[in-house]
Length: 134
Image 1 (spheres, rainbow, N blue to C red):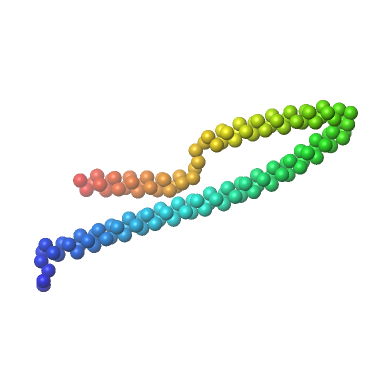
Image 2 (image 1 turned 120 degrees about the horizontal axis):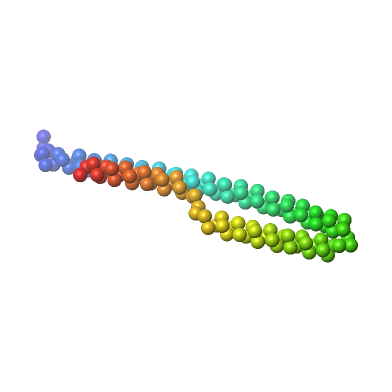
């Protein structure tokens, strides 16, 4: 009975602000969880890629060395030519790999694409709500 009409509006306003703040914090927490999940997935993907790349490079290197020495032994009289030819082939392959690496490094990363898309969707929803209330 002691509440006045002017005083009755305040608890509703504060409750509304408190609810809106709780909603904003919940949205922020959800987006942070999505971001952490994306970072973890990218970390595991990179670890798997590097492990496979290092293993493949090691096996390929051993195979190439054994192949070159086998050819050198097979053509012992022309061993200088065999080693020189393979040295030139390896230099050309290294240059091609460096060019490919440079091209790939220039491409933008796909990291955080889902998080950015969700934030953009949130912003679009907020803009629609702001436009509808005016």
